[in-house]
Every structure is written in C-alpha cells, then in structure tokens.
Length: 113
Ligand code: AMP
Ligand code: ZN
Image 1: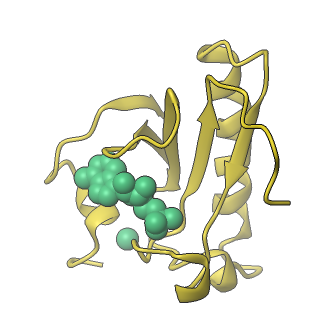
Image 2: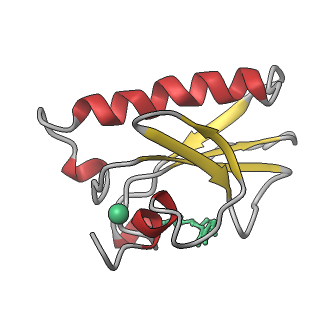
C-alpha cells in the first residue's frame, strides 16, 4: 500500500525507533507514548486491521504475537504489559495497518477489559 504510513515505515521511507525486526514483523516505539514503554508491533505485509485477518494472512498475524513475547523478554517487561489492537472507528484506530500496542512500565490500574 503506497499511501500507508506503516508500510512506508516498513519500507524505510519514514524513520522509526526500531526495537525488533525479523522477516515478517517490525516493532518500533510509538511516536506519542501513552505509557513509559509503548511499542507498536506490525506485520510487514499490509493487513488493514484485525477485522481483515483471514486464512491467507493469519500466519503474519501470529508472527506479530510471537514477536510480542520476544519483545517482552527483550525489554524486560517481567512486571507485565498490556497488548491492544484498535479495530475500526469506534475503537479509535487511526492507522489502517494492523498493529499491536505493547504498553508497560507503570501500574495500569483499573482495566478497560
Ligand atoms: P491507533 O490509534 O490504534 O491506530 O494507533 C496508531 C498509533 O500510531 C498511535 O499511537 C500513534 O501515536 C502512532 N504513530 C503514528 N505515527 C507514527 C510514527 N511515525 N511513528 C511511530 N508511531 C506513530
Ligand atoms: Zn500498510
């Protein structure tokens, strides 16, 4: 997707503060952090959101969750972390490329879920 912000980050056309990369996943620090640790984990292939995950692209989605576990260990998030994926306008999704927020580094207290 040539006009997708996160595809441009994958392509290196827009810089990012990378924390993890493998053949199918990229993770970088959120530009507007909502917690002391705020990392976005994205598939390198363009998937619009969780709502667009299907049998053909589910492996890329699973690779993201595998990367979440690796990043949690790498970033020493042993006290815990929250994983969020906003999907669609009511959830406040602003970038239409599947991404998982990793939030950590503080007691997040009362939960939304
Ligand atoms: P969402 O609102 O769930 O779609 O999340 C999109 C996230 O992308 C927001 O938390 C933004 O702060 C973040 N974001 C937008 N542009 C960039 C960028 N260039 N680098 C890193 N994070 C970004
Ligand atoms: Zn994209």
